[in-house]
Image 1 (cartoon, rainbow, N blue to C red):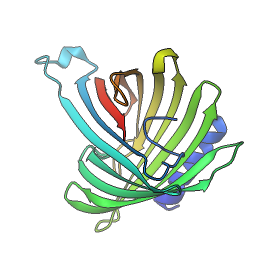
Image 2 (image 1 turned 45 degrees about the horizontal axis):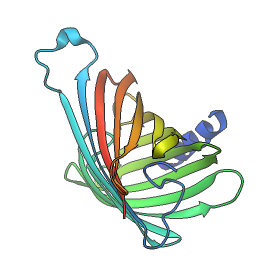
Image 3 (image 1 turned 180 degrees about the vertical axis):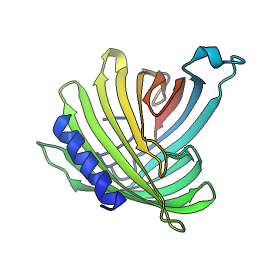
Length: 224
């Protein structure tokens, strides 16, 4: 089974058993933009191995989206890949299914550089609008052009809208770096309004399997 087919199958299975910061399954309207800058600091869960208070992991990501039309969103994802390597990816996203009932589905195709190597990045996003929030599943395959290696990632997000424009988010992050063990981590966070369209996200991360780190997450969002 090809990596892309396996990724699609994982998405469907997760839907059967199972509006965020990123548009995900919901396309941006023409002329609408979104940008976020996030930082994740990590430490080993086994505090007995610590030699200092300094974080041993330090990831930062810049993410942007812009609606070229009501049906075509362009974006950039700059930071760290599934495997932890540096990445710069340009992507296009378009709706596959937009309906009043059932899941909203969008497809994505990106291309760029990860760890100095060329990659293609197909993706699939599914989303459900809930009475007080949303549920989404976002999956991508980072396929290296020269080596044929493919890293897989699938995130499941539950969000709840709170009073005073606050949001509570619970995300389960999963991945399968090529040639390495899969990982699962949880990442709850709280989003607070700052000024105008700017929002602050603060949260924590905890590795459940394939990830022995715990961490803190900080992010700033804005619409434009």
